[in-house]
Amino acid sequence: MTVTDTEVLRDALGLLKDREQVAERLLDSSARHSFDPDTELDWDVPLEEGKWFWPPELVSLYDTPLWRRMSLEQQQDLARHEAASLASLGIWFEIILMQLLVRHIYDKPVTSAHVRYALTEIADECRHSKMFARMIHKGGTPAYPVSRVHHNLARVLKTVSTTPGSFACTLLGEEILDWMQRLTFPDERVQPIVRGVTRIHVVEEARHVRYAREELRRQMITAPRWERELTRVSSGEAARVFSLAFVNPDVYSQVGLDRRAALAQVRASGHRREVMQSGAKRLTDFLDDIGVLHGVGRRLWRRSGLLA
Image (cartoon, rainbow, N blue to C red; front, top):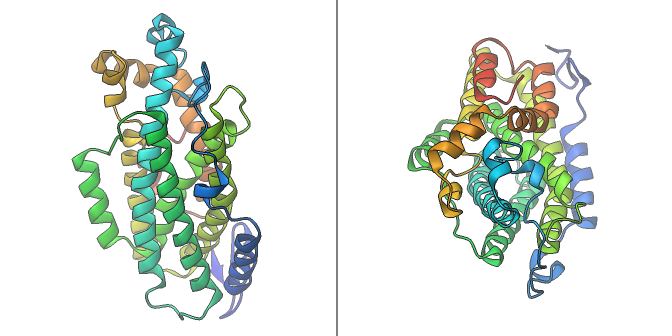
C-alpha cells in the first residue's frame, strides 16, 4: 500500500474517495432513509402463533443430533431466546461502538461532514439499542448480557484501541449480524416485529459499514507500522471473543437443554461453522485485501472459526 501524495491515497482496492465527499453522501442517505422504530413499528400487535423469532437455519443447534430430537415447540423457543441473546449482544456492541466513535472524532474539526456523519451514526446506534431492547421485551425473554470476562475485556478495548483497531472491530460486529439479518427480514416464517426490526437495522447499518470500511482503508495506509501491526493482532483477538460471545450459553438452559451437551454439539456442527464463516466471508475478504489478515492476526482469525 502506498501514499502517492498528500491528497491521493491508494490501496489494493484502488483509489480512496475523498473523506468529506463520502460523508456528505452518507449524510444525504441518512436524511432520506432513517427510521424512528418507536413510530415505524407497531409494537402493540400480538405475536403470531407458530412463527419463528429467528430463521431456524441460523439457530446455533440447527441440524445437530440434539436439534433433531427437539420438538418444534422447543426449537422455536430456542430461536426466540437466541434472538434475544443476539439483540443483547447487539446492544453491548453498539454501546462500545458509540464510545469508539466519540473518541475518533474528539480531535477532528467539528464542522466537517466526517464528524457530522459520525454524530449521525451515534444517533442511529442509540435508536438501534432501544429498538433491540424493545424486541427482547416483546419476546418475553430475559436479556442475555455477555460474560463478566468479555464485558471487562471490552472495557480495556474501549480504553486502549487505536483508530484502525476501532474500525476493524466495528466491522466485525456489524457485518456478520448484518448478513444474518438480510436473511431474516424477508423470511415470512419469522415474526413480523422481528422482520421489521431487522429491516430497519439492515438499511441503516449499510451506511455504517460504508463509513467504517472507508476509514479503515485510510487508516491502514496512513497509520504508523506499529499501529497497523497492533490492529492485525487486536482484530484477531476481537474475532475470538466475538465468536465465543455470539450466543449466550444460558439460552440452552432456558429451554430445558443440557448446556454442556448443547455447547459440544454446536462446536462440532459443520452447519454452524459454515454459517459463521459465510456470515464473515465478505468481511474477511475485505480485511485480507487491505492487509489486516496477515501474520499472527490471520492465525487468530482462523482460531476464532470465522475464517476458513
